[in-house]
Amino acid sequence: MDPDYRVVNRANWDARVPVHLAGGYGIDALLADPAALSDVVRFDRPRLGDLTGLDVVHLQCHLGTDTLSLARLGARVTGLDLSGESIRAARALAARAGASIDYVRSDVYDAVGALGAGCFDLVYTGIGALCWLPSIAGWARVVAALLKPSGRLFVREGHPVLNSLLGMTVADEHPDRAQQPWISGPGQATPALELPYFEQAQPLQWRDAVTYGGEEEVASPLMVEWNHGLGEIVTALLEAGFELTGLHEHDSVPWEALPGLMSLDDATGEYRLTQRPERLPATFTLTARLR
Ligand SMILES: C[S@@+](CC[C@H](N)C(=O)[O-])C[C@H]1O[C@@H](n2cnc3c(N)ncnc32)[C@H](O)[C@@H]1O
Image (cartoon, rainbow, N blue to C red; front, side, top):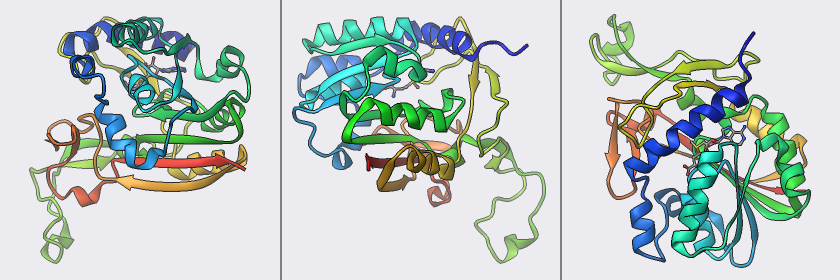
């Protein structure tokens, strides 16, 4: 029988916490300057709107770096995460930063029971969040139930096209390369469409002792993931009662998603393909409002 994904992923994320804390995770910079924002929230800021006085819930908040940044933009913030170790670290960060943030340990699918229905003006989530959830339709229903009437969703997430790619080496000459010289030649590394784009009942299981933003090995390396197509995400939100207010695709992503194929932009902390970044929608920002 397949393992319970929540047990596996909770153990994996609990085990990543000490590795991420040891790697820094941008925490020192947030503590050094009471006005500092995480790179992720700095990227989001032009599309976030005014958060002053809003009740915001950050789903899958991990160490709370983005949660703290939302609080610094004037929101009353609640963070929720499956991993108890993440919640413990996020509470410690808020205390050190002198920020008042509520943190709750819960599965996203149990968020309405944990936080109550119709309590928030904004649900904020993403950057490696949706891939841990088996049903995008179930997620959209939870997000809708958490919001007050006309409440908003803000999600910036790894693009499902990115999630379906692996770095591979080209074996053969492509016949069209004579007329399209930017096609990769034999021996060159390129992203290849190898993994499911559409949501599958069967998850992908990975055993990976390496985590972004850390150098030590992760003690519980097994993890369980799903991809969700962009159309599936949009349809799930429409069916849950949202109207779309924005959908932007970006050529950059805050983690090195395709190792060896991406370069870091120091100004933003984002990675994009080193060669021809215009090939890849690496992340998307979707904003929506309850109808
Ligand atoms: C990549 S992190 C999110 C990154 C976050 N944006 C940040 O600032 O670091 C993914 C988080 O999702 C949480 N998670 C995974 N599955 C979950 C679930 N079913 N319910 C709630 N949280 C979950 C993990 O514990 C982890 O903290």
